[in-house]
Length: 96
Image 1 (tube, rainbow, N blue to C red):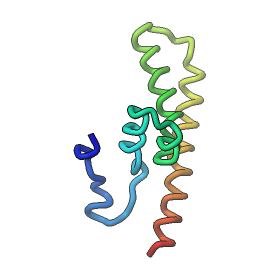
Image 2: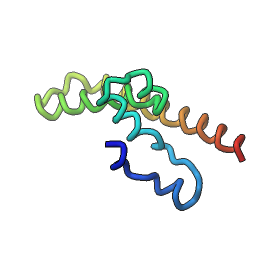
Image 3: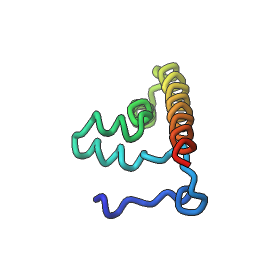
């Protein structure tokens, strides 16, 4: 499966990481059962996974009871993505 990962176009074209860099590797680690490695590849994977399950529950069961949780995990996911991106950019610029 690792052979078929889609390369990051931002890194390929601009030599600059994007906010989603590491997401594919994290999903691959989850499929392998390497949960700690998934977190270190892309820390936002767990809030996004929970958000996806909540949204799937809402669509399949037509349940509007978890709208607060969906909103909360949306905020947590965006915050985790932004924090990860800032850390990634900091590391990127230190290497230059």
